[in-house]
Length: 228
Ligand code: GSH
Image (cartoon, rainbow, N blue to C red; front, side, top):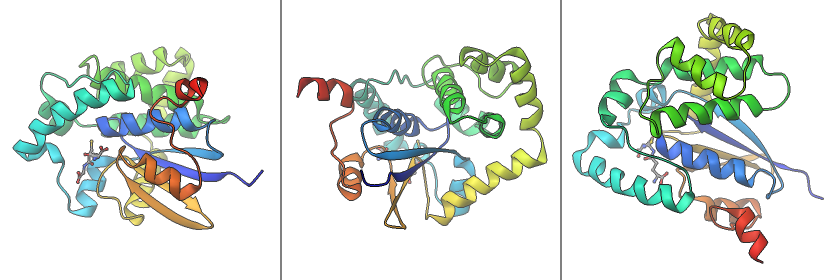
């Protein structure tokens, strides 16, 4: 069998399109011959570093996004629900603490990306399904508890997440995304024959599959594979 291609997914839990991209890649991790690398990063830093503006600040795009996300939620089978005040959630409260927390989980975790995956999902579920806070330590703890971390682990991760080491690690992941040309998330970087092929968004999977020599089987590959 050919060696696995590495696919990195840069994401931030403030970004609903990142949730879709993240879930699809988690579903395809064992369908395609790939090694998936989860790359938690900070979308605010990508916006600032690239000089871009979030699509939500343009009124017509904001309106469109609401409809688009409702349709995508059904199509991808990801339980996305726009919070009552998306502006407050995305732009005032933001995700810096949450992404530092996820980065600390990744730093602490020794065996694979399992905890990072579960903690990230729980944070998305809070903000993009339950309309709950993700900025307070108690909110982060609750998400981590649901993801299966012990009280001791949560305490350790909370402490670690305010350290310089973790702040720098998140900055460096964000810079890494910017170095790949990021202007938004999700950003998927496929390493093909030693060369990075970069895709923006959760709507480029067909093209990405073509590029890495795999087949796109729709948003639920297990279901469609069982129908073959
Ligand atoms: N068409 C993309 C998709 O379907 O995934 C849109 C993704 C998207 O809008 N991502 C937001 C972003 O960073 C964050 S949730 N946008 C930057 C831009 O559109 O320039």
